[in-house]
Image (cartoon, rainbow, N blue to C red):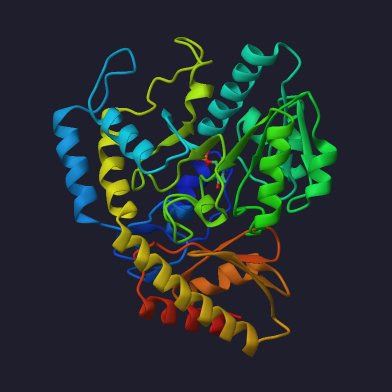
Length: 395
Ligand SMILES: *Cc1c(COP(=O)(O)O)cnc(C)c1O
């Protein structure tokens, strides 16, 4: 019998829920990945906005080693040190919030936010105020609650019935949101910059309308900053751009440098209606993950680091505008903000993503016709040049 390649072995033994290209990634260094054939790829996916510090950051490696030696896990039955320190860092850097709940993933942070919103409504307004309004183009995750809030039919339809009590409104459409509101609504959830759904950015007018409608209907405003938060758009939180704050916020992807984590940040008045035993998790916020997240968060929230993100974002913006100007029939629209950018093209985004591999570039997609660029936040302008040249050749 001939020896199976690792790709063939994977098809043999791993549930085939992913469509992967046929190279095997072996290691990373800075903003580059290397496959088993020794080929180098400039990484403008960053583990789907997870690897904000790139690969092999020495402080992240040191933090993992330090805490792995000391204590990895004891469950949430006991007090430990690192989670408290991280929660304090998060609360102190975000004036809107007072408390943190840790989970293991983005979807679990969303599940937590759903439960906290309904628990809060039950305590203050009694039964029946349990509907959550979400938006067209949203993506909140794959669990039964999170997927119920995710607009795209293909994620939900095969798994019905998903969590009931959800209404959808049109994104950036205040009238549509107003029509979806009612006394039964306990929360409105949205991404200030939509990720999977196509990189659309919320307008300031729309977010202020959403804030006002939530206040009017005594519903909580929840921002899902799992992809757009923690420095991605050039400010620590994407909502800083709009000069308003939500009542709850979910974060996850980049927070622990590639280790699995999620978190819900919430106001004290919501925290007051959550009691011991209402929610929980075995792994969430364990000492290893939160110790590493302290290091990652301290690096990203440094004003110099965020200034770098804005500088290189501006350069990426100029470069993308040049590309769009040079290829008017092919590049149709630029979307997103900071280092979270969408390029809507004529033709299949999936085909371009695959073809870019031959140019040594990894990019993601959002829907059928949008290329999604999510580089590590540590990229320099020469990496932008390299990526845009590769993208230009690919297109
Ligand atoms: C990725 C993502 C999620 C889900 O996170 P998982 O860790 O994959 O469960 C939720 N919301 C947004 C905006 C995301 O980008």
